[in-house]
Image (cartoon, rainbow, N blue to C red; front, side, top):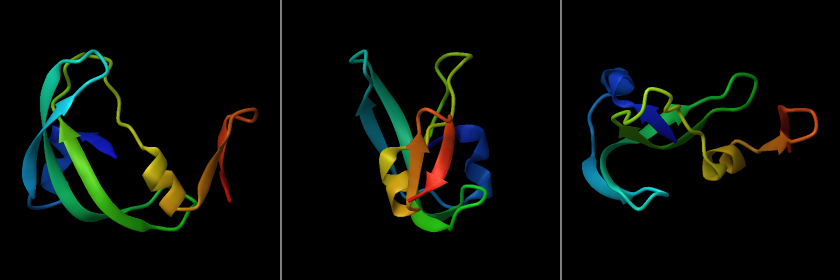
Amino acid sequence: MVLPTAWKERLGELDSRVELKTATQSTVVGEICGPVQIQIEGFRPIYNEVLFLVPTRARQRNACGYIVLEQAQIAVDMVGHRLIYE
């Protein structure tokens, strides 16, 4: 799960800094915090790590990846544009 660095004070201590390659092959630095409780409204909470990135573009968004969705037993309904319990 990727969140903006402005949110990291809410979650406590950072575990480590990591270098990551983006889809455009540029390198960015992120900070990992965890495990933290992650709960998507209406679904059960899970515990996982969170990656904090400094936004590089004004339109950069938070990202919830496949592993978080799978751990919370959530599936994406592409036709109905919604999350459903598996």
